[in-house]
Amino acid sequence: MKLKFGKGLSLLISFSLLTGIVAGCTGKSEGQNEKEKYTVNEVMVPVKDAGIELYVKEKKQKDKNEFKGEEVVLFLEPFGVPTADAFDVKGYSWMEDLADKGYDTYAMDFRDFGKSTRSEGMKKPATESEPLVRYTDAVKDVDAVIEHIKKTRKVEKINIVGWSWGTVVAMQYAIEHGNKVNKLVLYGGMYSFNLPMLTSTMESSPGVLKTQPAYQMAAYNMTRHHWAQQMAGKDLVEPGAMEEVGRTFLAADPTSKDRNPITIRRAWGPMIDLYN
Image (cartoon, rainbow, N blue to C red):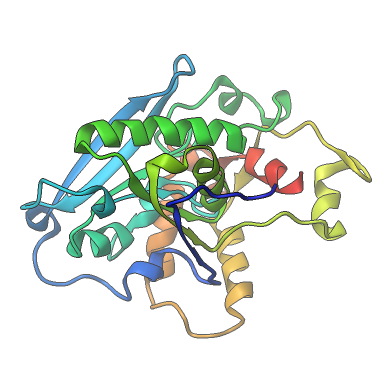
């Protein structure tokens, strides 16, 4: 995919081996009680696709109600911790960190992720449907949410922060709707791959992509192990942070505790995008 940005779009690309949890703040917040300091609004935003509603969370300072477009930020969720709450982990909240700096922060769940509408394919066995949620679907979701924010805040452009697979969606959205984007931040981006050790598990034969699964059953230890490999033994994360992230991970799927071991359903479409 070639990226071509229109005039007026400011692009900041950030590369990191760590999670987005620690990018915005370095430790547990202190001082005012969260309920006294912040206003949290949660809404379901409809998409043009019939029957789909998207979960959107807003967090801002309680005493600030007017914002310019450059003060509004929308976070796009990662594949590793597939939930809007990945940006609002207790004690390690990126949303709170930016709210403290005067921003109006939003985070959303794509369709089939987190608290957004789960399609029938997510309710059936994973082998009965094609991989769910491609970047083309997610771009529609982002546009619906940005239109909602524009109407609510009476602004023309906002900032977008994409993390992991969220960077793929954010880039494509900026290509298609650059007139609605003020600044674009890409954090810990996902990239296409052609290593046999990765592609072989996704192919029925060399070069032939499998038509299933619709979703993956993912355990938190899988994500944690991946991060540990990237950190290469360096002391980069506070004690307790991983446990809080783990709780957020498992809460990303309301059915997670129905299985032993505990796992979440994670739509497989994003991995197909990377394969292609």
